Length: 593
Image 1 (cartoon, rainbow, N blue to C red):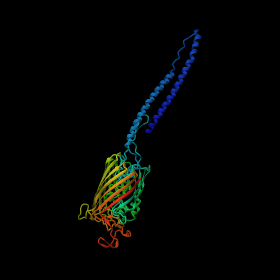
Image 2: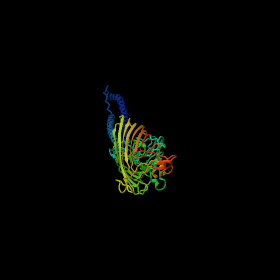
Image 3: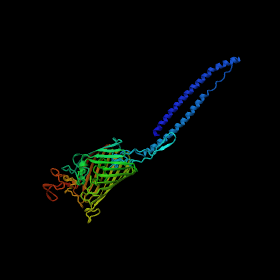
Image 4: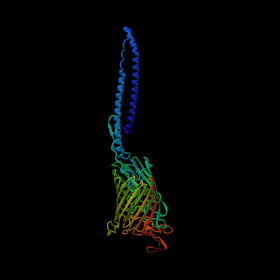
């Protein structure tokens, strides 16, 4: 018997009581009236008969007997009413106790619904800093922890306790890399759609003649409006089966594949095959622990904390620790949720942000995400054993990426309603095939990566406005994680003689930014940002641009001949204009449903 049954039972019983009372009262009234009429009519006849029989002129009439049937009926009615009144009081007490128990249990349990972004959902994002896909996607909705029902006999039935959905115990949309709407207006039982739009206008104070910006995986053209990304897709979830797809039309369709050198090995043109897809994977949810997801395909990496999608972040241009590390992986992952506060996610992937393998060995990695409370997150990403330099099978890469985020102020009704910070530290190296992890040695020069980034954000007027200040620094001798400027159309496959990335070559860089957000709706952000970026070598696009006169000549791996020009001591050679710093104003309109 359910809770609703109790609500229905009390009114029905009360109606029954009233009906019985009405019928009994009506019967009693009729009986009493009949007895009274009969007594008054028979009294004279009785007197007359006595006079005739005795010859006496007047005889005292006999008193009419009390109608026992009426008294008994009234007593029965009162007794029945008393029993029913006691039963109603008992049922009301049981119903009140049941409601209190159900509300208490329901408040501690979240129904299993897909998150969006999820990677994971939660979630969030893609969740989920890597919680965009909820671990319970496709699972049946959990029941309250302890439900007691009554079948009228006093017996109770108790359902099995349900497990809490991971990361559903608090609102984590304040996290850097996990910002998103709190409501999903288009969500259905089978499909949670997702639509994203990222349109920007970048003003570069270097004013490059070719409007081309290098050294960034988020910003690409200057003094123009550009669609950075248009994404349409979402999450499918039914009968514990999962699937997610997200497109990437716009600048991302060109700029993300060009940073992957793996298509240079073998055939089938992988960068073209995957160009318009940012996420595409399928999976299955197992009801083990607090959920286990087994998924395969292209999924977000979240090394470097920031999300691939700018809507989800506190800033438009993240520091190098995020911008120069992977945005996606192609492979398989298993999301294990031992509790509603912890996720352990091992990966088996083709390589470091790659559609295919660079050599013969795949990469291995793992993410550990812990959210012990609603105001703190600890995130660790580890990567190892990958041979991620094209054509160098003996060179192995290791990397660790670790972040902490803390919301240290939260007063929703104040003008300044929230404050939080994020801190990320990265370290890594490569060894073998002519390089060394530790120091310059007989095995080769040191090839390593060390960096950090720190951001602090303030929210105002019930999250209608936001302001973020942050920046970071890296040191990457060997330049193996430095984004190659697109000089003469260069890509990670072709390389460029104008900016080489050889063992032992130094590269140090730093940046700082200030970001102001206006969010009139949870589904849109108007963003203004100022960025200052600098390096110890010429790296950023100057006024002369990085495109040869007449456009790219089709051979990015070679010097470009230009009569009358000199570059690097070579006569009749065109030279790109590279500077040690840049200053930009980024304006963006960001939408997510």
